[in-house]
Image (tube, rainbow, N blue to C red):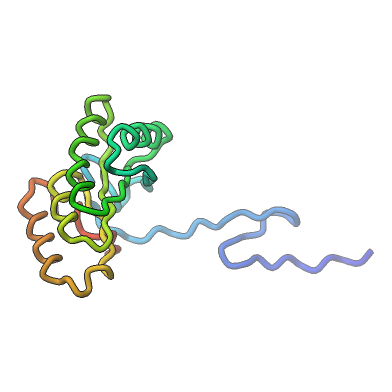
Length: 165
C-alpha cells in the first residue's frame, strides 16, 4: 500500500495525529474591562457564559425556574427576551423572585424594535442588549435610552450594546 497523502489542516484546526484534530483556540481580542452587575467582563477576565430563556417573560414563575436552571448549569448571565413594556416591567418581579431564592446572576434584557421597553428595562436589569440595526430610524429614542442609563447608578459600559473595542 502506498503512503497516504499528508493531512492539510483546515483553517482553525491543527493536526494532532493522522486521525485526530483539535481546534486551535484563537487569541482573544483585547477588550475593555467592564462590570455587568458585579461580574467583570472583558480584559483579562475569564470568558463568560450566558444563556437565554425561552419562556414567556410575562410568566414570572416559569421564567424564574428557567433562570435558576440556567444559573445552576453554570451561566454567568441570563438573557430574557423583552418584547414590550409589560415584559420589561415584569423583569422586576423576575429579579425579585430570583434574589428571594438566593440567585444574583446579572439579568440581561434582550430588546428588539422597542425603544420604550429598553428604557423601562434599563432601570431594572444589569444590562440591556439591543441590536443597533433595529434603531436606525429611531435615533432620538436611542439617545433617550443612553441618557436614561447614564442617570442610573450602573455604568454606561454595562448598557452599551454588545460592542467590541
